[in-house]
Length: 143
Image (tube, rainbow, N blue to C red; front, side, top):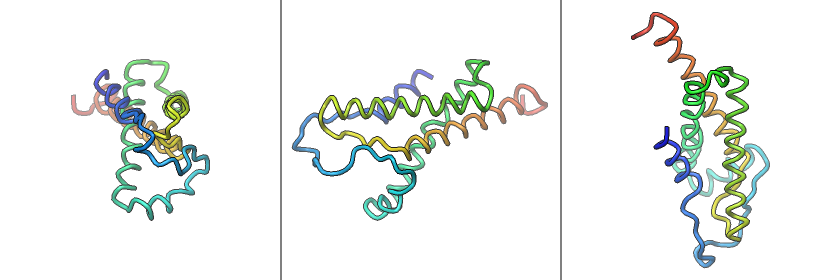
């Protein structure tokens, strides 16, 4: 779990670039319209990079709900797992916004789509937990 958290911090927050000349100052660093920039993003970075970023946002959050449900009986319901996934993803986006504001440089784009995709990943992780529990703990699965 600790190694996973270190990787998540590296993926979502670093590197923090402090050289203003390296980063172009144009562009939007906060994106609040769901799904709208997907087509624009596909055009600008291509399908391969778009799929990589989308899959990365989903897969990065799959372990969160799995580990939280595994470690805390209070987080073993769908509703609580959903709230935890949304909350953690929101905190990640908020930290990215704070880094942007504190450095004055748009290191990361704060994006509603990231929140949606991260939450989707969290819910997939919850379903993986339920399947794992059914197969290995509650049922007659592979023990």
